[in-house]
Amino acid sequence: MIKMIALDLDNTLLNSKKKISLQNEKTLKELHKKGIKVVLCTGRPINAVWPYVKQLGSVTEDDYTITFNGAMVIRNYDKDILFKDGLKLKDFNLVHEFAEQNNLPLDILDFTQVYELTDLVKSTYKEVLNANLQFEDISFNDLPNQEYSKAIMSEQANKLDWAIHNMPDQVKNNYHIVRSQPKIMEFIKKGMDKSVGLEHLLNHFDLNFSNLMAFGDAENDIGMLKNAHLGVVMDNAKDDIKSIGNDVTLDHDEDGVAVYLRKYFDL
Image (cartoon, rainbow, N blue to C red):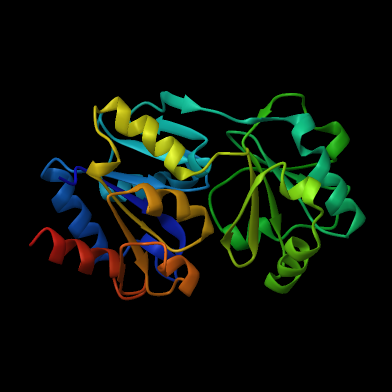
């Protein structure tokens, strides 16, 4: 029985205007009232998705959000952390060296903000993300020695295509690398993805993946789409992502999430 619904944000729950449509909002609120857990699963920190959490009314003591592509599970009610697993500063040496040698940008994220590296070419992450998130300009050598969540390479899609095809194996093998959007490539801790955070959350509620339905559209959704009892892919996703899921719904500008849920739960 499905007791939890995991939802990617960009190009899944959010439409092209970065909004949750009224139909998606209404449907998810109905299911939330019926006791089904509605969990946003994103690469962003909680403060960058808080308006969406509030819109859905997911602010009770049993409501959580998966952030940083699974690296943090946080309770919405009081921002209490259920699970966190990040990277050390030295872990970014390889990707920073690759970016420096190839005139590519890089942003480093801890668990609260973004550090835009000034010793590299300028990043487009702030403009592409378009979210309420704090950015700080800093050089790589001046970064504080602390725990971080991931690195972001934000550039034109063709440049990121070139980067992944020309990236040395030493760099590729050191991270879990995913394209969350055509213009955003993420460098996450090896073995980390949204399914890791979801497993911790499911265990917290004495549930497992047989109780999970997941919606997604991109590479950083693959883990949860594969592990969920029912992985639903948006029609705007690429064919290789569609082949991973159990089913396909309408695209993100056609209320694909709501249409699928209303039929599945007979609302």
